[in-house]
Image (cartoon, rainbow, N blue to C red; front, side, top):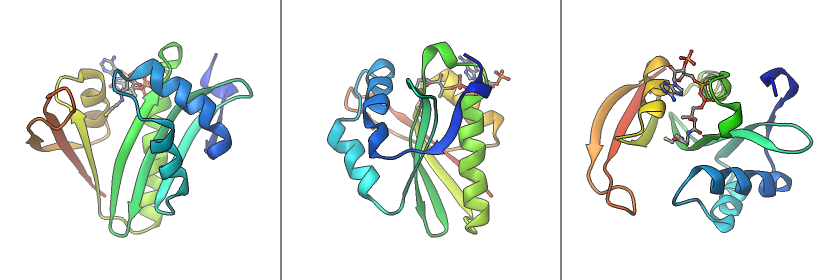
Amino acid sequence: MSRMELDLVRLTEADLPGVLELERLVYKQPWTESNFRGEFDRSLTLPLGYKDETLVAGYCFFWLLGPEIHLLNLAVRPEYRRRGLARSLLANMIAVGRRAGVGEVFLEVRHTNQPALSLYQSLGFTLAGRRPDYYDDGEDAAQMTLIL
Ligand SMILES: CC(C)(COP(=O)(O)OP(=O)(O)OC[C@H]1O[C@@H](n2cnc3c(N)ncnc32)[C@H](O)[C@@H]1OP(=O)(O)O)[C@@H](O)C(=O)NCCC(=O)NCCS
């Protein structure tokens, strides 16, 4: 189960079953199938993932919006964590942004999600604010940004 056995690809709707399986495994309020279909159909959305023939091990979905990137969703299967998959997905997102002349990357994260906060901080993201009641269960979001 090393990262080397996985391919880094642009995901397509054909990957939807594996994406949904991972989404439902990881999130208590998962995106729905129609949420994902909407993003696969949206021309400004880039879905990157690590996968093999049997599963999707990790993904990130982001919007490339002219001078900005918005990270929408990021998840890694529990058995593949702490192997650098998320860091690599985000590094690829940032490289796409740099090639496209993006100036800033934005994201929201649950303010109690320490693994994700540590990950983003390790990549240079800084706290930019807090959105109260951002999530359906009432939790606040931390807003983070990275200047490219
Ligand atoms: C957050 C998440 C995507 C990290 O994925 P990952 O592939 O395990 O992360 P990486 O292996 O690339 O970790 C890179 C760095 O992030 C930080 N990090 C990752 N997981 C961490 C944890 N559990 N505790 C503390 N720091 C952590 C570390 O700095 C790590 O570097 P290191 O392993 O050299 O110490 C994964 O835990 C996950 O899917 N969580 C549930 C969904 C989620 O919270 N998504 C983000 C929503 S905003």
